[in-house]
Length: 287
Image (cartoon, rainbow, N blue to C red; front, top):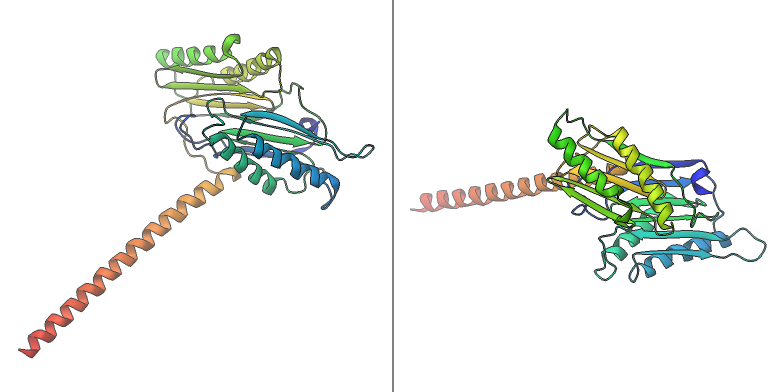
């Protein structure tokens, strides 16, 4: 199974204040199996077909899984699923756009890898050469906690309220909890049964409580579910994580462009002013 293979994971936590307002294509984590397939092989064709099916299906459904069967006797079968965050609808196009972005990035991140998984803020995609569909997997993929907030009874009460609401078994596969300025989100993949979903979420929530109990925010992603909480504006921009480099580069580009535009505008004004002064001097001499 993909989760038990040697996998390289690149991770960075969503860095915006509230989960619902964060850009859906913000990178969370990605992982690729070390096993590779040969270019031009039937397996490559099946992977491409599977990922194309993700994008097509996401315009209609927020979750789906696929199996692309190989020729009898070979090992080219591919298994995969995609899922959008529970508050994204297929009708609005947000789900399809997120899945298309995830597929594109997964193709770059896991080029020629036999298995790969990628989590964005708004969606998750995964494929492998061994079936993982319907199999519960509580492997920890990402666990990050914010800075400690110290003992504050009100804050602790709100956090316990939010996390407790996420743990409610009647919450379904996508759950949101809010208490004051604190917000929590939890979700499991659609291939799990209700019992398996609850079991996975309780594991993620338990780790969230024990590992990030006194933190301003916390994120725990397991292979088949996640649980998160944050005060609005509580996540801060983190450095040193490769997945966030593109966001930082974009910021630097924007700053550089702003400086260049400012310089050009300044030079233009200076040229106009000098030209005006030169003409004024010429008119003065002609009198």
